[in-house]
Image 1: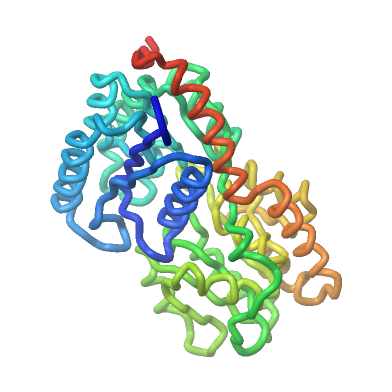
Image 2: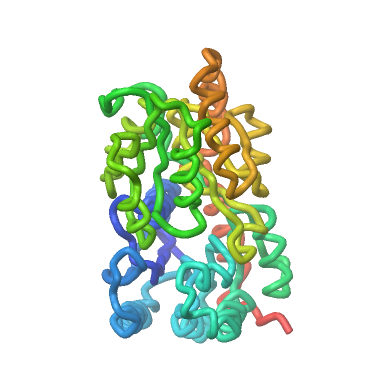
Length: 374
């Protein structure tokens, strides 16, 4: 291998502006390029729950992107996959070419059934498709310790590293303008999906314990958007919809706190959660209120960056909002969170972690695929 190593990055989850998936992809690609890689993204352009596209259209998109990738793979030194059950053809072709394959894991196969309940019937098939890929991977990257432990058991090997999400600390930082929104508010930034606790946040807003002068500002879109239509039009809920990446930090800077109240629907969060929204809010120097789930709760406790509430507990969430609204020292939590992200969780640091594993694995592969675990 001479010159800059070449990496093909495959994402069958359509990157969309304002969604965490696009942010993660863009930041990892940028950080790997900064580390010396020539990275080319192969991604679908239609699909995903928020697009409401048909399953047939999505399958056609998966096929088109992988056919293009398979044609171009000989130009690359390795394949990096944002884990997806339909990526098996690309993985098998890379193995045939003797190229190393890396997989980035952001959840378990159970996530599909939570987002699309109608597909739970096919859970065994999805699990088989994921396992077939993970067993053939030269290395797996998981975003939490619990997910890494699950991946080792599921794949049957120990070629697994933990690389959590991060934040762009140039864009997401305490210094800078706020959005100029009227009054006091707490913010939620993320996809409107079942496990993000949209129902819990709305129930907390209606709870008597929620301060009357504090609004809930929601940034994002998704299949749970209909829930917002049932909220009384009293001005206490402001839905901004999906916002451009650069427009999110001002919304966060002006907030009393950010909410990250993920729920453990069907056990999908039992292995831990490390959401992008958590790191970005902390980086902006505001306190966070998070549900008591592995990894994120431990991170917030360790950094002293906010409050922890039980999952799916509207009254506890309302009480936490009231506590921060009444605490003149609450911003000290935000300052500690920003210091933590700057010190330990920038995308630059995440990219260097991945780069170290890629460069260690590439020459060691010797052009031979990793053998599937028995």
